[in-house]
Length: 232
Image (tube, rainbow, N blue to C red; front, side, top):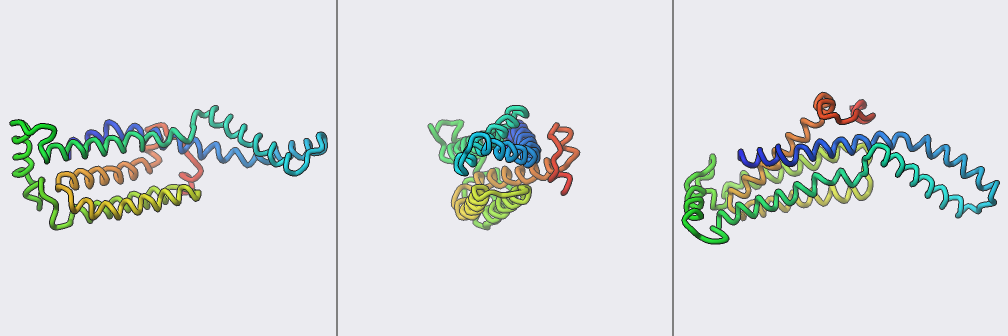
C-alpha cells in the first residue's frame, strides 16, 4: 500500500498537474476562437468579392485560416492537446509493470531462489484485513466489487469535469466504463495482492482528481483559472 501511494505521488501527480494545466490553457484559448472566427468570416466575405471565389473555395480557405489561427494560439500558450495525454502514457506502463512485478513475486519468477521463497511465504502469511493469504483470490469479492465501483466513480467524475464532450470523448468514456466492469471478474480471479494494488491505485486516482478540482489547489499548482471553473 505504501509503495503504491509513493509511486503515484512521485510519478503520476506531477503529470496530473501538468495535464490539468494543459487542459485549462486549451479551454481558455477556445474562448478566443469565436471572435477570431467572426473576423475570418468578414475577411472571407471580402476575399469572395475581390478574387471571385466560389462557395467551395471560400469554405476551404476559411477552414485553413481558422486552423492556422488555432495553431498560433496553441504555440503561443504552449498547450498542444496531445500533451494532456502524457499522464496516460506514464500511468499505464507503471500500472502494468507493477502488476507484473507482483505476479512474479506470487509465482516466484524468474527464478525460485531462497529470496523468492521468503517473499512468497511473507505474502502467504502476511494477510491484509479479511484476507489471510495474499496469494489466493479474494473469495469474499469485496476487493473486486470495490475496484469496479471505484473505477466507475472515477470515470463518471472525469466525465462530469468535461464541459463539452465530443463523440470521441463519449466513446472513450464508454470504453473505460466497460473496462471498469470487466475488471471485476478479473480481480476476482487473480491473487488478492494484485486486486489490492489495483483497488488502492484506483482509490488514489479518485482522491487525486478530487483534490485537483479545488481552485485553491489549482492556484498553488499554477493551473490557470477557466470559465468552467468559475461557473462550478
